[in-house]
Length: 292
Ligand SMILES: Nc1ncnc2c1ncn2[C@@H]1O[C@H](COP(=O)(O)OP(=O)(O)OP(=O)(O)O)[C@@H](O)[C@H]1O
Ligand SMILES: [Mg+2]
Image (cartoon, rainbow, N blue to C red; front, side, top):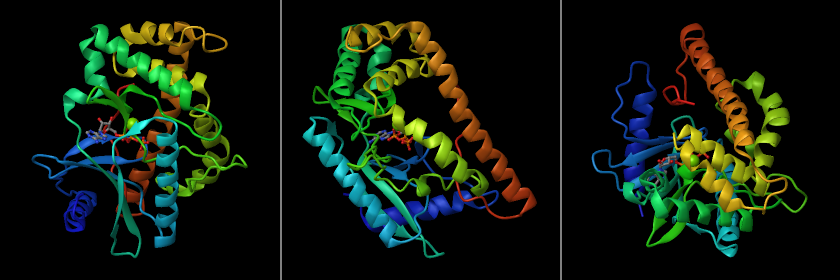
């Protein structure tokens, strides 16, 4: 797996990119809503390094690593193949830890988005396999983000790779994940209300087979693959109650896009506030505007 010295070098690049006016030599493979996916080495990436918001202590990082490993075991038990994933930590100057989930970089032609873009029978088989997996796996305990951008085909098998946010609940229904860390990129005044009123709704969607499939279908609009929505609806067949319709998919996409766009604008506003008014460095790298 990746050497810790390599990761420390990557983290130094991240720190440089965070400095005001900092030149960035980073190779970004993807901006998620939570993590930043960096390719290392930058010129010919071998590793996909998913950088989480900084953790306050080793104990917090231990808890995260344990939650992720339970999630991976549970997915394995339920028959979901996942790209091998390692958790690494890099100490920061202020005593906190940069935590990375590291995977091998998958080739472009293995990515589900690229395969579905080619269309034809391969696209149909793949979308149907995702729907079958979602319906078989998702329940109150284990959640899945079944969006197309989280899957690949490796050796003819469907594999999942978006595991940085382990969607796992304890027997009493509480989240196993310490959600505080994942709210850290929001201005602190908003963290408590978002945690209380917004997050439970967002997380619950990943635990209901119907909304997981709805999300997969709605996200095809973001990928400009609207013509494949019918394939997902047909694959679900009569297994969802009530059955999904294209109208519901489209209206769900609009409201979901609004929620995420709102969270992004809040972060942008906070960045302006921190940098121009408080004259402090802003500690997160934000994506350029996401087309929705
Ligand atoms: N192992 C990998 N190989 C190649 N590309 C990857 C790999 N992992 C992630 N990517 C790219 O980065 C994008 C985002 O990664 P991923 O889905 O894991 O995280 P995310 O969506 O940022 O998750 P979250 O929003 O939960 O933080 C992917 O859609 C893909 O384009
Ligand atoms: Mg993702």
